[in-house]
Amino acid sequence: MHVSHLSLADFRSYARVEVPLDPGVTAFVGPNGQGKTNLVEAIGYLATLGSHRVASDAPLVRMGADRAIIRAAVVQGERQQLVELELNPGRANRARINRSSQVRPRDVLGIVRTVLFAPEDLALVKGDPGERRRFLDELITARSPRMAGVRSDYDRVLKQRNTLLKTAALARRHGGRQMDLSTLDVWDQHLARAGAELLAQRLDLIATLRPLADKAYEQLAPGGGPLGLEYRGSAGEAMAAASNREELYGVLLAALGEARKSEIERGVTLVGPHRDDLLLKLGQLPAKGYASHGESWSYALALRLASYELLRAEGNEPVLVLDDVFAELDARRRERLAELVAPGEQVLVTAAVDDDVPGVLVGARYAVSDGAVEKVDR
Ligand SMILES: Nc1ncnc2c1ncn2[C@@H]1O[C@H](COP(=O)(O)OP(=O)(O)OP(=O)(O)O)[C@@H](O)[C@H]1O
Ligand SMILES: [Mg+2]
Image 1: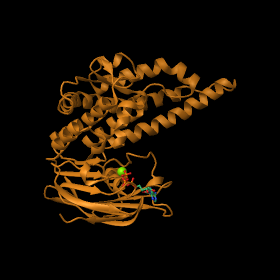
Image 2: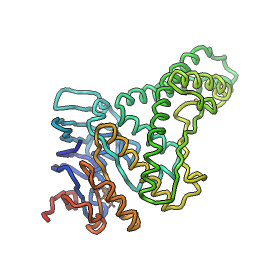
Image 3: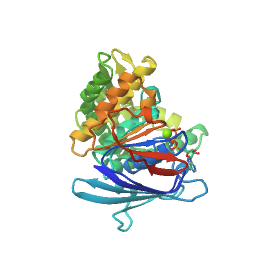
Image 4: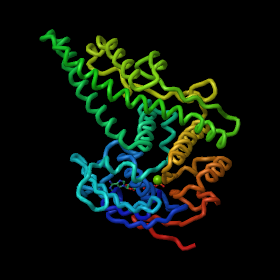
């Protein structure tokens, strides 16, 4: 698929901007702080309902405005669709598809698909487990948009269960009335149900991603691998033996039972996909804490390239977004990455100077300066 038009109103630094786009490569070039990343961040938002730079929507709305609008025309094969999101920080966001009346924002998922490479990706390797969980869950949702519903069910159940545990913990500490814990049993089942579905998808994703990531790393840094992608579940060893959703449900439920005493002591849910991690190994060692800066970078790029291969193989080619990544790479990896992404249906690149865009990425060019996005004739 590709985006044929992007229009923004009160998004980040843009009061209004209209950007027609073609398939193939488009580079946005301009000095620092002019709004290049803001453009691709908007496209990424349509694909994930989140920003790769910030956790909340508030910074996405132009200072002084009270809501932002991202609108895109999307072409997939013969099909044209218009998606629109209205970001209302502090209130519910709104969405429309083909100008029809309101749909839920999550109904928009799956229309725009992106794989975004950015300097922030280094956190995939070096950062907290939450970064890797987000990576897995965004990819799961890109593969299967209905997982957005499962994720939000899980988050809701988790929140309610935590509230209950907190109350129990407080009652216990202050010697108050003992809580009726049978309510907790029901929440355990809800949590295990949604959790097992999420876990099953994550495990399947990792198994599919493993060979693709290995191949990508070999292309970027020949002889440097192999990579090891291992899921570290908070439900413990028993998870390894579970081969389907039903069994994972049983494992989670059992682990919640075992953890109950400490959960009530601490007032928080200690078992479930929200406590898990993806261990990234390079050779025999964990990448985090051991890999060099360059190796960590190659690792992060390999994970993104593998995501691209996976989505493409599963039938809907995503838009490739490369935000400022070439300047961070040495000449060899720059060339290799450029060659690997060049054939993509649509490739959007941002760079501070023309020279940072590798020669094989020929295509349209826009100059981005002070809120204006203007096509450069070449
Ligand atoms: N909510 C907002 N309201 C107004 N301006 C904003 C908002 N959010 C960000 N900006 C401005 O947008 C600019 C940053 O834009 P962006 O990150 O797209 O720059 P860039 O062209 O990618 O720069 P670089 O080359 O440094 O990556 C900053 O000047 C920032 O002040
Ligand atoms: Mg930028």
